[in-house]
Image (cartoon, rainbow, N blue to C red; front, side, top):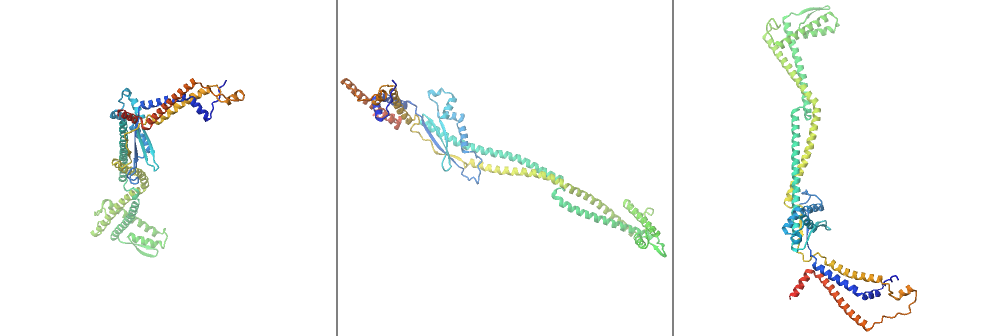
Length: 529
């Protein structure tokens, strides 16, 4: 016959629990006993924590820009890796004599370090105003050790943060100093190139173009003036020579047409007479041709005299110069004119040389301008980089001083770790609830299984539904005196066992509320009294 359905109405469930009360009470009592045993025998773990506030730098950012600009979470993570490194943890173990128990002394160093890391917790938080903070907590069986280790970890964090910030600021400043020196050397090199270039091509620089052009104009004007003065000196010399020749020779008389004229020996007079003849006759006229020949011969003779005097000086011997028979005053005038001509020719030669030099400078100016522009561009780029590095170097030095004076961002302890009074492990609340739930669940599960596999009829409705027969009446269980006595004993035992269960529950509740150590201490005090 298949099992009958378990009734689910409250009255039936209560009757079922009363009927099988031993199945509920025995597991419940055992669960309470096991729970209290675990609460007393499990090692008690204490926890201490400290709250550290990340305080912003005291100097406004508009005045001093901090070099350390990493994210708070990243920086705390980096600090955690450094603080929880093998070296620091070994210092903690040696300083506070951790793992000194018999069982822990046999552990490997790596196992000790891993166990210590697992008991250290770091939690970063942020309040509504945007202030960052983090909590450091540590767990151990000794409450004094817990407090000391937590405070030591907080001190490590603060010291390491100051050291890292200062080291980062100093490192940045040193790096900028090295780069600044490198850039300074490059700048000085380019400055030396500019200086050498200016010294090498002095006079051909772009800013000297206007000055060169003005000097060139003045030299050209001076050259024209000197050439004009030289020409006038030549004319004066020729005129002087003609006067000398005229004074020695008698004038020649010529017949022009029907007129008789005295032909002059002076070149200027001959030129004037030639112009007069040309106004009346053509160039093929015999008198015109003869007079032009005389003028050419006289000019050639004067030029030879000039060149000879320029080359050899004025010679007064009667065999080499036609002016040897002239008066001293005439020779003195001739020498003055010759000296003036020599001075003018030297000046013209020097002026042409200077004109050539300045023309070459003007021609080379565009080329020098392009080369100088390239050097200046490099100089400006390097100078800009140098000025930028110099400004950053000064800012870095200010930031270093700010970090050394502890005016930058700092970690400040808000709540120091205190001596813990109550252990966090074992969790009495969780253990208490687990014991109650386990005891009731075991009893309830056992009752359910028994009822599930019980194939007897439990209610009249089960008979009607199973056998399809209507139940006319039910006969109650007939109890004799022996069964009645046994039932009385069972009720008394059940009451006693129920009282024991309640006592165990109350005892466990007292352990949960007051704590194991306080309860044991109170019991010892009560027993001693």
